[in-house]
Every structure is written in structure tokens, then in C-alpha cells.
Image (cartoon, rainbow, N blue to C red):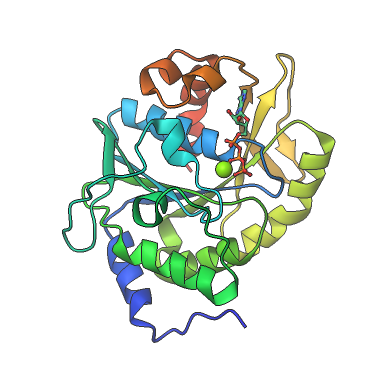
Amino acid sequence: MVNIVESDPRVSGVEYQLSKVEKIIVVLSTKGGVGKSTITALLGLALADKGIGVGLLDVDFANPTLHMIVGAPTHVELEEVMGVKPYRVDENLYILSPVFFAGDTSLPLRGQEDVDALLEILTIGNWEDINTLIIDTPPGLGDTQLTLFKLLRSTAKDKTRALAVTTPSQLSIKSLERSLPLVEQLLSYKPLVVVNMAGPDYLSRHIGEYAVAGVVRYDASLEEAIGSLDKIRKTKAYSDVMGIVDSIVRV
Ligand SMILES: Nc1ncnc2c1ncn2[C@@H]1O[C@H](COP(=O)(O)OP(=O)(O)OP(=O)(O)O)[C@@H](O)[C@H]1O
Ligand SMILES: [Mg+2]
């Protein structure tokens, strides 16, 4: 049985570390491969380029890729101050990834192990000087998401937002539409939706009763830009995200 004991001292550790940020955006999807990690990175970079201090946190323990997109190495020296400071990838952009602790390996965790890993990375991350923390999650609504939502609800409820990513495929949309009410119930917040890898004419304002905050086009140049923030800045996908960043962070 997966459990977080309220008296677990790590919960107050999480509360303390998260008290340093103004806003938390959880990026999620029910289908895999729809672009969560990409949208997390692009959104973080767009916000950082607007002069906002952004922290990126990867909690996809089995398959962390966020560090690759923003060009952070696997082996980094993290400064140890009240936990660890995240790794700085650009002027206002910082990242914390499980690969910094476990190396370039997959951590397929079960039940309580997943809860422990999540509690530990949230307890250890010192987000001092960070305004907005963006959390990249694995696909689906499983142990990681359920624990994360529960933790955020008890430690950072008023500043937690959720951004659900889907492709325009009706399979992905249907799957998300089915799950969004649950996300809303668990987080006490109506998630926003981004439709990613859309065709040029794609237009949608709502997925079920949930507002589409923006549409990001399919952009073949992204593949080559992985690992380079300068190349990412030149992609159409980055301009699309820059165009919707205000509607995502405003609410
Ligand atoms: N707008 C886009 N245009 C073109 N390719 C994209 C776009 N968004 C994401 N991709 C590509 O799609 C693939 C999947 O993206 P990504 O890894 O971000 O998805 P994910 O939802 O995080 O996957 P997972 O569920 O495995 O965590 C990657 O190769 C990425 O470069
Ligand atoms: Mg991912």
C-alpha cells in the first residue's frame, strides 16, 4: 500500500523547500510521448528569457530526459546548501534531475519506492531564488502523479497549477478528457491544456470543459535543437510557446 504518513518529517521538508517558490506548474499527460518534457523545457526557457527565475524538476524516475533537452550533463557537481541547489543551465534557468543522483540509468520504482524517491528529490531541492518551478512527470496517472498531487495539495496548494499536454489525436484527447476531472479533484485546480505537435490549421478552444491555453505546432527542427538552448530559441515551437506563456502563467 502506497502511503505518505503525515508525520513523515520529509513532508515538512518538502513544504519548506516549496515555500521558496511563487508558483508550481505540474506538466502531465495521460498518453506517453506527447511532448511533456519538450513543453516543460520550452515553457521554462520562454519564462527564463522573460527574466523570470525558473526551476525545472524531472520526476520521471524511469525515463528522465528533461536534462537532455536543456543540455545539462548527467554528471554535475551540485552545491550543497540546505539540500542541493539545482544545476544552472542558463541565466535564469535551473534544473534538478534524478540522473544527477543516480546517473544515466533507469529507475523503475514500485509503490513505496516511488513515493520515497519523490519525497527525497522534493526535500533535497533548494529552490531559493526561483520564482516558478515546473515539474515534468512521467506519462499517465500512476504512483508518481498521485503522490505528487497529494503532496502538493498538502504543502503548496494555493500556488500549484497543472498543464496537461496532448497531441491533436483523438485517442490522446479522449484519454485526457477522461482524466482531467480527476486531476482537478486531486489538485483542487482546473488544469489547462496545451495541444502539441499540431498541424498548421489546428484550432481548438476546449477539451471537454477545460480551456486550451495554446497550440504548439509540429516542428521537425526540434530534434536537431535538443541539447542546445540557442538552437531551441530559433525553433517555431519555441515561438509558439513564447506566444502562449502569458496565458499559461497568468492563471
Ligand atoms: N512540437 C513538436 N514538434 C516536433 N517534435 C516534437 C514536438 N514536441 C515534442 N516533439 C518530439 O516528440 C518526442 C516526444 O517528446 P517528449 O519526450 O517531450 O514527450 P513526453 O510526453 O515527455 O514523453 P514521455 O511520455 O516518454 O515522457 C521527442 O522526440 C520530441 O523531440
Ligand atoms: Mg517525458
